[in-house]
Image (cartoon, rainbow, N blue to C red; front, side, top):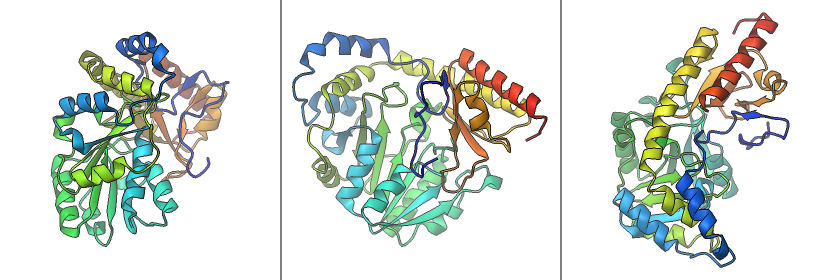
Length: 346
């Protein structure tokens, strides 16, 4: 794969795309209704301040509107934060989401890596604290992509304290947090020196609409980021969809229940096939295989995410999304077929 290539780029020959981690329930019906009813206003310019959407987010998050910035997906917010701050040196996990590295490199920032260890199941440990020094910024993907691991609350408190001591801007990317059971225990509290990034992309199956938001502990920094980047960066459809989606409480509960059930099914099925699979707290699983499963599954018209372009992993690691049961069964049956035909163990 290309160094910064993502999942979700499957070609037309693919029937089942497990490379992208989108809610299998699809776009909420209420969101579809709002978009259909308002199609006639899409020819207008959008509100550059996303006023109604930010008001709704403020009510849901119990955060002042002045500390909220909306963007064209999480990637847009990552870009704008980096360009607003212009850090000289940053710390990243390895492996983790590649957009942090890409945008930091664009501004000439020196990048330092904290390598997660396979023998620690890619979990964050106190080793991280040793690396939290002599940097301006730390991006923490939580739960982490592609490992699916979440940082425990005690660990998060230690990370925050170290960042506070070292004057490091702590940015928690929580785009997969909504899939986590009891997420309130794990989300980063909004304090001075912190930013939390969230997105509608994954949880509401709105990847094509492009919508995310960031919550800032520092109102002045929020205002600086708000004025970094292009105007009208959140479209009318995205603003309408986001405002409507935040009312979908039952949809979120159905999602969490489905993901837990189907994640357990996938994990147990892979484990029973003697595939090395890692536990996950969110809507995807990381696993290891000596076989070139990405290529072999293409013959079954199935796409999975090869992790060969993640720093800290190689071509033997793969990530799969948790989808609905019928699709998950198709993937497992295809893997069983491949393993039986190969006659090799993992």
